[in-house]
Image 1 (cartoon, rainbow, N blue to C red):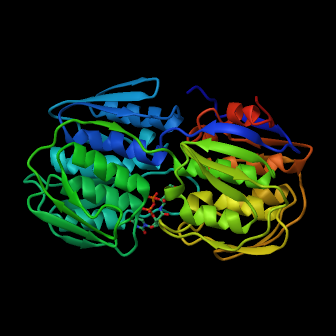
Image 2 (image 1 turned 45 degrees about the vertical axis):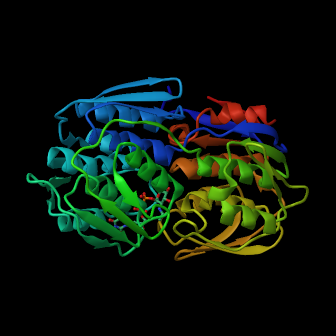
Length: 421
Ligand code: UD1
C-alpha cells in the first residue's frame, strides 16, 4: 500500500453512517503468522491477508532474513530457506513492534537471534522482560546489547514451566513459538487468551506442533523435532470490526459488518448495548444500529476477554458525545491517553488523572486540525471528526494505513465526507 508520511485525512462532520463493510484478516494475527513461518523449511501460504503497510514491513523483514515473500491479493507465500539469517535490524523493527515476534522462532530454529529493541506505537513503554526471562528458562542465554536483544541456544531449547506476571500477548507468542521445537514439555501459566494468539496456535498445530489449552490461561506445548510448512486462513480483525461498531454507535448510524465475529467481541458489544445500540447477528457477521444519542458508559480495559486496549480511543470518542458522565480506565498501556489531548482540540470535555479519564459528554464536537499518534488513535480521531461540526484534518494518515485497509474509501461508501490529501 503506497502512503506518504505527509498524507492526511480531511473530514466534514455531521454524517450518519449507513451501509455495509467487510472486515478482512486480523493484522495482529497475520503478522505473527508470518513471523512463525520461519519455523519450517519450505513454502507456507497465508490467506485472508489485509492490504496494510505493516504486512509489507514484515515481508521486508523476512526477506532480509533470507526468505522469499510474495504478496498477491489477499494471499502471502513465504519460502523459508534451510538456514535463515538471524539478525532483525533496527531500521525495520522500529517501524513495527510485531517484528519482535521473529525472536522465538529464530532461537528455536537457528539457535540464535539478534533483534533490535522495537519502537512501534507511542502508547507507552512495552517491556521485553517476560520474553527474555521465558527464553532463559527454556535454556537460552539472552541479554540486551547496543540496542539489540541477543538470544542464543546453540544446543536447542528444553521444555520447562513458565509463569507470566501478566498475560502479555507478545511474550506468550514468542515463548509458544520457541517451545514448539524444544525438547520435552513446556507450560505457560497466566498465558494470553486473545483470539489472535489462538489463531497463531492453530497455525502452529497445522505445522505439526503439539499444543493444548489455547484460549485458556494454561497452555501446554510438547516439543517436536521438526515442523512442516502449512496453508492457513487468518481470522477476521476484531479491532476493525469493533471500530465499525463504534462508528455506527457514535454517528447514530446503521452498519452491517460482514466478517465481524460477535464471539470475539462479547464484552465490547455488551457495552455498546448498554450505550443504547441494537446489536444483531447476521448470516456472516453483525449489524449495529443506534437510533438515539449514545448513553455514557464506564469501561476499564483488560487483557482478553476483557475490553481491548485497542478500542480505547473509540470508547472515549463515543463517550465524548454521549449523554452523561463516564470514567474510562486504561490498564494495559500508560500512554494511550496521549490521544485525549488531540480529542480535546475537538472540544471534548475530558480530564485525565493517572490511568483514568473522566469524560463529560457534549452533543457535538467542533472540527479542528489534529494529529494521529498511533493506529487506533488515528482511526479514533477520524470517527470523532464525523461527529464534529465543520471540517477536521487528521495528520499522520500513515499510522491509520498500518492497520486499516482502504479506511477513507470504506467511510465514503458509508456516506461520510472524507478525502485524503
Ligand atoms: C497488546 C495488547 C493486545 C493488542 C496489542 C496491539 C493486551 C494484554 N495486549 O499486545 O491485545 O492487540 O497490544 O495494540 O491488551 N509487558 C511487560 N514485559 C514484557 C511484555 C509486556 O512489562 O515482557 C507489559 C507491557 O508493557 C504492557 C503489558 O505488559 O503494559 C501488555 O503487553 P503485551 O500484551 O505484551 O503487548 P502486545 O503484545 O503489544
